[in-house]
Structures are given as structure tokens and as C-alpha cells.
Image 1: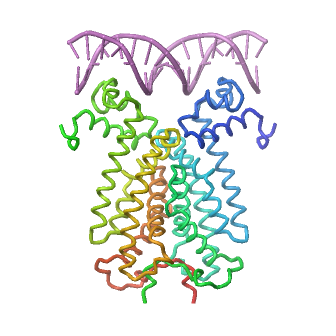
Image 2 (image 1 turned 90 degrees about the vertical axis):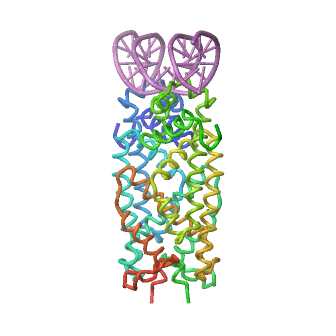
Image 3 (image 1 turned 60 degrees about the horizontal axis):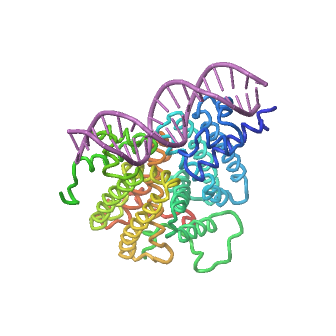
Length: 208
Length: 208
DNA sequence: GTCTATAATGCGATAGAC
DNA sequence: GTCTATCGCATTATAGAC
């Protein structure tokens, strides 16, 4: 079979691992648990993946490819900023990413892979932000696209991370702020001018 | 002995656990490893902490108290925003926090404690930001302090998280942006006016 | 308060049948 | 490609000596 549509068991093992990591944390993704969820016997895990590290790496790569694919189509969309935001706010990706960050702490092969992935994501996001800001005539030296990209990612990450432990404080306000910012700068039909839609900017420039 | 200056062994166990979690991830913080680093035998762990969960909870509480104490003195400082930033950018706290977020995924008692702590931190930070913004006459409805607080925290967190896997891309720019923002809004002697110190604001308000 | 010793369980990984 | 069976080891936790 092709590398694209993989054998059932191998694919199911990867998906089971990702699911367990999201639901219960990486420490719960043992060969036995993974095999059980995938509907096979534990020994088969080691047929497809010589070590558990190889399985985790496959999950990283699978998740990374999926996220990158979604990102590439996002930057081609009508409103790249909002599309990227919706990916970053998707806890399916962000929670997995957090688990892998922790896993990378004591598995250096994972860390190296995660780093490569993080850099590719940053490149795509920054390129999209650059495009949008440039189209709006923004001074890119004063507002480096990479900064806007990181602020957006950081905001989304903190919402997802905190949401996982039940914190909701300020989340609606932050999401609304991001929404207001994107509505203001995004290329798509700006909503009719209401006071609340005044140009968002960091406070400090608001003084008279 | 008082609850303040605890017995050597108990305190050392907590510190050893925190250190191992930072250096190698929570999965490495087993009763044996923790005992070895603290210089005692594994069984003593269960004398002080009935289960490993209790040990982890003690670490959460200890770290939380330390962080909150630093925060309370930060908000009383000359430049509360910068003081809070320096705490959030401190990887000693942020890495531990990330480990606990992952740990909380399959230990619900940890999640509950983490939630309480996160909310207290948010309260302190938001109160400090409110004070600063109000002093500058900023419209708090347009720039909710909780939003500014979360943007700051999210920016610091992403820098720490990525730094842990070796990503440095954009970090200097983001830190410089935060620095520029705080220099602009902070109450402390503003640096002589150079072009680079122009009021930071989110792009989109920069159009002519 | 700290130890030795150990029970009970689950882990990663391998050998080899089918 | 999938299984049964198992090895050797680390884990949480307990019992009981000192």
C-alpha cells in the first residue's frame, strides 16, 4: 500500500496515541493502552515502531503535517489572520502541542522534531501576517510581523491551556479583542462603523 | 518545627521534585528519583506524602506561593508591568507551570489546584494592569486590563515554551516589542524621545 | 523520622509460532 | 502482519524494624 493511505493498524496506532495524549496526557500513552484503543495486541506496536519514541515521532509528524496543511490553505483564504486564529484556538492542536512540549523535556528526539515543526509554523504564519500588514501599509519595522504572529499564537495558547484546567477568566474578552483586531485589519468586508469597532491599538497611544 | 521553616527532608523532597520536573519533565519525578535527589530512601517519600499526588500538590502550592509572593511585591514596585513581565519570562516558573498543565491532564486533583492558582495570578496581574492603564487615562472598555494581562502572559509563555525546545525565532523581536510597550506606558522615567520609542500600538491604527 | 524489605502492578521490549 | 508468552525492570505503595 502507498505511504499515503497507510495500513489500518499503523494508522490506527498513531491516531490512538494522539487521542490518549489529548485525553489523558502523554504518560497514559503506553504500548498497552495504545494497542488496546487501536484494537490490536501490544506486541504489534513494536512491529511498526521499534521503540515508543518512534511511535511518538510518528504522531508528531502526522499532527504537524495536518496542522501545516490546514495552515497553508488558511493563508490562501479570504481572511488569513482569522483563519490562522481559528487553527491556533483549536484545542485539538494546542493540547497535543503542550503534551509534546512536556514530553520533549525528557526525550530529546521529540524536542528536535518539535523545533523543526515550530519553526515551519512560525514561517508560514509570519509570511501571512507580513502580507496582510503590508497590504494595509503598516510600518513593518515598528510592528514586526513575527511579533504580531507570536502575540496571536500566545493569546490562543493561553486560552487553550487554561481552558484545559477550567479557567475561563478573561478568555471571552481576549477572544473579543482578537476578533475586533482582525475585523479591523482583515481584508474582508469591514463591519459597519460602530463605536466599539474603533481601531484597536495598544493603550498608551490612547492618551490625548 | 513551624510550618514556615519545614523539616529538612520534607522541604528537600519538594525542592527535588520541582527540580526534576523542570530538568526532565514530570514523568521523571518518580518516588525513587525524587528520594535519591533529596538524599533519602524512597519509603520516606510516603511518610511525608501518602501518595505521589500529594507530593505533586505540595510542589504546586510551594511554587504558587513563591510566585504569588514575587507578584505581590512586583505590583508594589516602581514599574509593575515590567516587574510582572520579568516574572512571566522567568523560565523557572513558566516551565514548571507547563509541566503541571500536562500533569493535570491525568491527575484531576492537580488540575483543580492549578486552576485556583491561575485565577489568583490573573487577579493580581489584572489589578496591577488596571492601575497602570487607569493612571494613563486609557479607556478600560476598549482595552480591558485582563486582555493586556493575558497578552503579556501569553507572549512570555510562548517565549519560554519554545525556548525549551531550542526555538529562538522572533523571540528577540517580541521581547523588544514588549520592552518598547512597557517603556512607553510604564510610570518610570521615559527614555529620551528617539524615533524607535514612538508609541507602540497595534497596526491597523497606523493607517493615515 | 528514617530505614530495609517486599508485595503488586505495569512497563518496554523480544522470541518465536502461525 | 498479527499473535501468545515472557523477560527484566521500574513503579507506587505497605509492613515493620530501629
